[in-house]
Length: 170
Image (cartoon, rainbow, N blue to C red):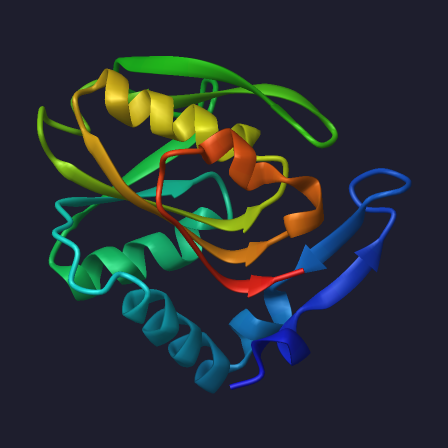
């Protein structure tokens, strides 16, 4: 399936000079949505996965779907102050600012195999912070999955050592 035809470019969002890759046309089409989920699953090649971590906010779309299909738990990683229980946090930089991500302290147990999923790999700051959070809790990152990778931003360099798979690369 030509997934690229379901991705819309939005110029100057969220700030001037940034071209945002909008996945909502893909999400709006049931066939494309299901095919994208199937394709993301096929990129796992039988990896053992106990938990799927979804990154706030668009990572929350596919991560629970993947977790359900894999028989794994879903773990949300959210921006600071959004989770109700005891958390640990990690600061990170992204292409248009800085922020802090948090995860519940009891979300991942020692030795659990973890898939990290987000919609876009851009500069790599977000994914790097999530990998650090997972490892602080004793989890093992087995793969980082993305719907889209913006290769020209070199985000994969920050994830050196982690297996990375992307459905689309720009």
